[in-house]
Image (cartoon, rainbow, N blue to C red):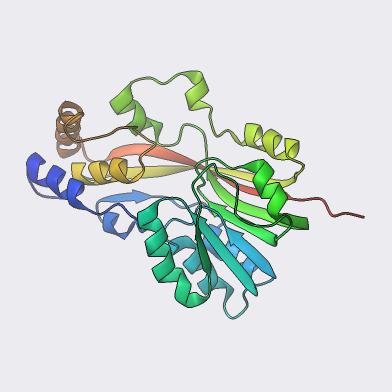
Length: 260
């Protein structure tokens, strides 16, 4: 995009960060999508579920897309949790009229539902799956269906700002470790599919907005704290074209064993 460094940075710093609507990035940044089509696949499962829960729903955008894919079928009971207050308000506005019960629940706290309340639990990009709580709220025979962020996702960008990261940080969110944790909570892991996807940032405004929105990438990110690195990256993008990184994702399907 055209504009001086100062203009682009100011633009990226001014865009609201609530919810998980990434439409602002159109033409400024792009990311490949996994071949499994999470929202469509989640919609197929919603159409067959009696009671479902979406954990860490953000502003409800992805669950809304899954409901569109599920139409006309849908669960008789559908709830969603979210921890960030601006996202809770946004999710209430978008999902409430569709009959979804939106509950404010801080990440890491127990899910505010009874044991065995749901036959389907969904989540797209949870910060950290709480496997014991997921297993607790699933009915015997119920399914956890989710798309997780994988290890070292977008680390070309992360390490540009933070430098080389320790092995333990790079290997966090590894699907094998998550599978072991799910099994330890009593779940049966039925399917794990992985993908490495190309990302492109076409201007520095997109970088600024992305790091403000996805706050765990560069913790404590501010334009002032990283101005020198941002200015250098702006020059690099202007001279050489888009900054390329790679996200990692995995589709995770687990089941609570049925009771004889």
